[in-house]
Image (cartoon, rainbow, N blue to C red; front, side):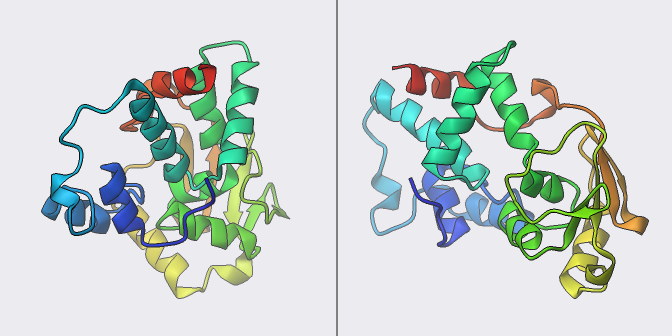
Length: 206
């Protein structure tokens, strides 16, 4: 599965979840809670197979974090070899991606925007520029918007919007200094993801 570059709203309707995690996409889903296309409202009337259910769950999570199949599977295999609950470890590894942390801190409005933001060199980790979206953030790392990037209009708008939202409990954020700290790994109950990770484990274990 390659990285999807089309309309995130259409893809969200197809998957049945808000992949962008934005109010705009959620309003569209509430208005049209069915798959896109001419026959969107007629799809899914039959009972899906067990394989289909597990495949869809895997695709939902991969698309939520904007990853291709190779990246996603490699990360899952790493999680499966780490002590602990595989599903929770896998989600924690996904959450530690730099592009995701930038999104969680509100520097970017979507993960897709965060990926571009990181790739263009606007992000510092512990004072050093990191332009790799998949970079793995560690506990205690400080994430900062580069000084020269703080005057960009969309970044300022994102930070103003973030001030009105709840900050993820595993992150400490200082909007005034365009910085935040990854203070701990998120627990499963912290992650309000509409995903059954056990289906993904079963998909890759088949």
